[in-house]
Amino acid sequence: MLPKVAVVYNTPLPSMYDERGENAAVAGVMDSVTAVKQALVQNGCPVSLVGLEPGVALEQAITDSGGGVVFNLFEGFAGSPETEALVPEICSRMNIPFTGSPAGAIKLGLNKPAAKQTFMAHSIPTPAFQELSIDTINEFNLSFPCIVKPASEDASHSIKPESVVNNLEQLSTQIARLAGCYGATVLIESFITGREFNATVLGNRVLPVSEIVYHLPFRLPRLLTYDAKWLPSSQYYQGSVVECPAKLTPDELEGITRLAIKCFNVTGCRGYARVDIRQDCFGLFNVLEINPNPDISPVAGCARQAKAAGMSYTEFINNILQAATCGELN
Image 1: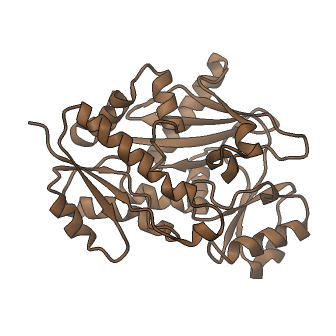
Image 2: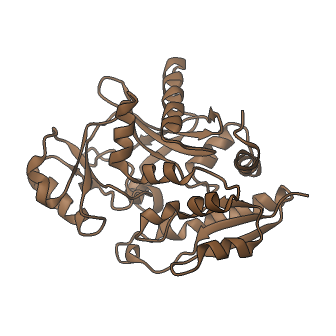
Image 3: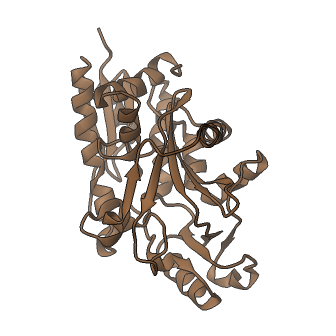
C-alpha cells in the first residue's frame, strides 16, 4: 500500500502584499495544492492537506496529518521569506521523507547575494552585483543600467519597470522603496538585455528549456515583472510570451543544460528546481538566480516544461514524489 502523502502548504492570509497589490502570488499556492492533490489521488496515493499558519505548532501539524511522506508546497509565511525553509528543516529533524530541496538549498536560494557568491566561487557566470542599503549607496560601483531587487524575495515581488535604473537618482529612489518594505539591504545587479531562459531540473535531467520572448513597447525594459507573472490583464503579462521548447542550437542547449545542472548541484538542490538564465551582449549565458522551491502549478513554467518532455501533469507530480521516496530519478 502506498504511504499517505501530507501536502503541506502555507494558508493564504491577509498580509503586507495585499496593500501593495501583490497578493496574487500568495493566493496562487492554492492552485498548486488543488492540482497536486488531484494528481496524487490519480496515482493512488491517500492524501491529507496540511495548511500552516503563523503561531501553529508546525511539527504537531505534520505529525497529526499521519503522512508517511510530505509533499512540500510551503512557500513561507507572507512577509517572512526566511520561514520557507521551516518544513524541510522539520521533516529532516523528524526523519520524514519530503519532496524538493533541503533547507540549506532553500535558504541559499532566498539569499540572492549569497547564491551569486556561490555561483562565482564555482565559475558560474552571473551578472555583476552589489548588496547595498540607503546608508551605503555611496559605495555603488557598477555601470548603468542596473536592476534593483529585494535580496530575499521570490515570485517577482516588487519587480516593476522602474526597477531598472539608469542613474544615481533612480537608484536611490529604488533602494529607498525596497529597503522600507523588504529588508535593510537590496540587491543591485548589472542589467543584461539578451535572450532570457528558464530551465527546470528534475532529478538528474533538465526538461525542455523555456524562453521568455518580450513583445513590449521600446520604452519598457525587457524583464519578468510581478505583473508579467501574475496579472493577465497587464501589458507586461500580455507582452511576455513563453516559448517552450526554446529555439536553441544544439550547442546553446548543451550550454544551458550544463549550467543548470551545475547550479543545481553546487547549491545543494534535490528533486527539482528552476534556474533563470540570460545571455549578455557577448552571447554568454549568465545565471540570474536559482529557485529551489518553484511554482509547480499546472500553468507554471515547470509543468509547462514537463509537458514539453511528454509528461502528463500527474506523471510530473509522481516523478517529484518518487525522487523524495526512492532517490533521484535518472
